[in-house]
Image 1 (cartoon, rainbow, N blue to C red):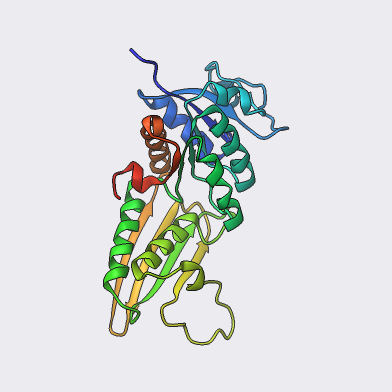
Image 2 (cartoon, rainbow, N blue to C red):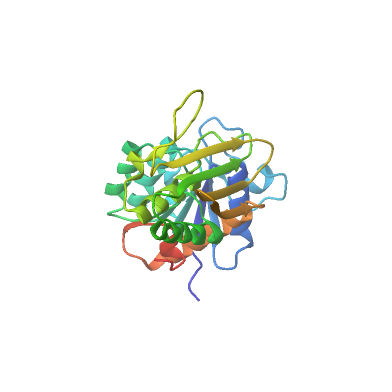
Length: 270
């Protein structure tokens, strides 16, 4: 029997990193072969199992990703934009599938994925859950069916520790709404209202961000016209949905040609 794909988790000590590790270890279709943290982290050199407060599992936490990447078939990466771009170059060199759940990229940073995706499979999504990706498809369809008499507002809520806003998922939904309308989101995005802002521009796609407590992720896409309102909603109550989606993407990408993909590709929603 062929060995199951080996997976490396970056940002191993973070909340998503721990969830990814737990999900990979519970999977019968994948193996955990490495864990990466930033240089200087207290876990470097430790057995990952012991660092997590349990028994040894034979996987050392590394600060140099090259060695673990070289023996992996996939990388699960929910870290920060600068770190992810560095990992993308190494993943391309080792031909590992790079699953990116990191958000907060600038347009210039996103452009840097293009050359690396010529050499390896890159699956990048603002959200890895099945429900959110179905919501994205629905958002595009509803936006296409309704004219600009319906204002579009995307409201998202996350825990107090989230550092970027709007969330990657909110931007993914905004892009879907813009595709449905046949307009570029960059020219029709409305954010950060404060003070005397004037009336809302016709055709604008608005974003509102809430931060507090331990909210995992809530997203509403509101289509509001005079006299009626349509709301599409997704609530995540457990980060495991993102981790399961990431592992699914890593396995899906094993036989795919190099290129950039997203969860709609993984889930067959194209």
